[in-house]
Structures are given as structure tokens and as C-alpha cells.
Image 1 (cartoon, rainbow, N blue to C red):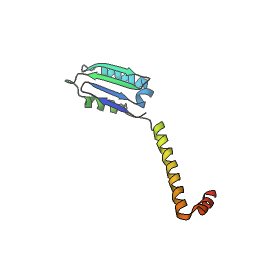
Image 2: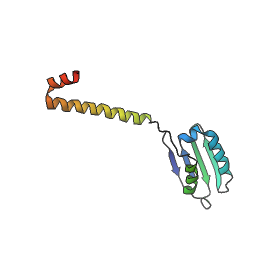
Image 3: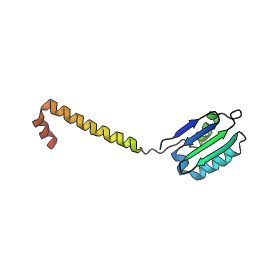
Image 4: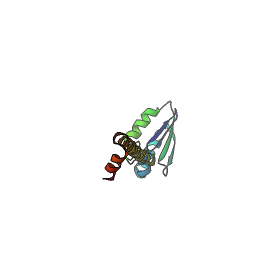
Length: 119
């Protein structure tokens, strides 16, 4: 999953692999954040790996809050490629092979290219 960050003037939502896979450290930071007077509400959806933090914009700005979360690695994501990324990579390889075969057939002719492909 790629890290998803959505900011508004009074809410910050983060969805990431780190939040999903490190529930104990996430819950510990949530408890610390709840002690801040400017934080009005926190919604944690642990199955989705998502946390929404509501805050008073007069006392706390979104960028400062995001910096805190980044230092605790909440925005960190796994390096595993997604299904779509794998599909694009495989499709590109197939397209490249097809184009190379077409070019080879046009350059050297069908009989020579068949002989070269059979090796």
C-alpha cells in the first residue's frame, strides 16, 4: 500500500503500511497525542491502517502535526510493489518483446527471424 495523506484545516488523515503493521507503537503515540489540548479527536481504523486526527487549527497547524507523525515513521510504506505496478512491469516486458520481434522480422525478413528465434 502506498502512503495516503489527506490534509484539511482541522483534520489530518494518514493511511500507511506502518500504521497497519505496528499497532502497539501507533497506539502509544495516539495516547500521547490525545494529551495535547489542541487535538480534539482521533479515529484509528487499525484494519485499514488509517488514523484521522482532528485538531483546533488556532492552536496547532497540520504541517506541525505531520512532522510529528513522520518522525515516528507513520508515513513509511513497505517497498513491495502493488498489483498494478506488477501488471505494468509485466505488460511493458511483453510489449517490448513484441516490438523487438516486429523490428527483427522487418529488418532481416521472416525466414531469418524464425531461424534466430528458434535458437
